[in-house]
Amino acid sequence: MNAQKLSKRLEKVASFVPTGAVVADIGSDHAYLPCYLVHQKIVSKAIAGEVVKGPYESAFRQVKLEGLEDKVVVRLADGLEAIQKNDHVDTITIAGMGGPLIVSILEKNPDALNSVTRLILQPNIHAKVIREWAIRNGWAILDEVILEEDEKIYEVLVLQRGEMTLNEQQILLGQHLLAEKNETFLKKWIREIENWKRVLQSIEQAEQTAEIAEKRKELHHLIQLVEEAIK
Figure 1: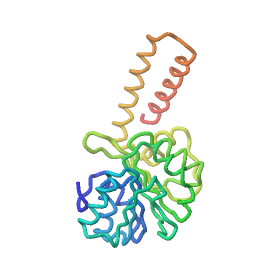
Figure 2 (figure 1 turned 90 degrees about the horizontal axis):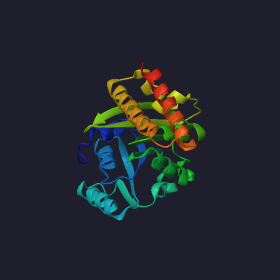
Figure 3 (figure 1 turned 45 degrees about the vertical axis):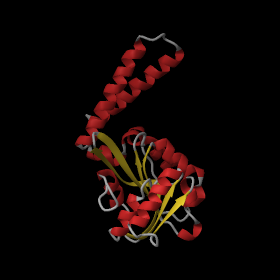
C-alpha cells in the first residue's frame, strides 16, 4: 500500500469522499489516504491528523515525498483538534480503530463538527457504538459496506446529518448490511454466533453468580437476535 495504491478498505473509504470536499483524515498514519485523494483529484485540500509523534513524522515525510506540502497539511494533534476553523473541513475520515475509540474522538471535540456534513468511519470492531452515537447526535447512515481483506472483516459507515431510527437488530448488524446480507456479512455473524456459543459453554461450567446469569441471558439474546436476522 502507498499513496498511489491504497488497501481495499481505504480505497472503499476514499470512494465515499465527495469530489471537491475539504477532508480531514484523523489518525492518518502515513497520510496515504489524503495524498491519494489529492492525486486522484477528488479533493484539492486535506488535513492529516496524528496524535502520536512517530506516525506524525511518517505522514510529514510521505507528504513531502509526494510533493503535496501545499495541498496536504499534517498536524500533530489529539483527534479533532487537528481541525482549525479556517480549514472549512466538510468531510472527516477515521479508519482503522475500534468503534468506541472513534466515538470518543467525535465526542471529545463536538465543535469541530460544526462545518462537517459527512463522516466516513471504518471501525475495526464494534460498529454498533457508532450507530448508537449517530442516533443520539443527529446523524443518519447514508451507506454501509462490509468487506474482507487479509482474512479480516471491516465495516465502513457513511454518515450525513439527519434523524434516524433503528431497531435493535439494525443497530447491531447495520440496516443497509442487513438488507443486502452478502457473503462477508453472513461469514462475520456466523463466526460471532459460534464465539458466543463457545463463551456460553464455558460459563456453564463456572460458579453460577448473578453476574454469570446476566451474561448468559445477554448471550442467549444476542444469538437469537442474529440467528433471526440471518435466516
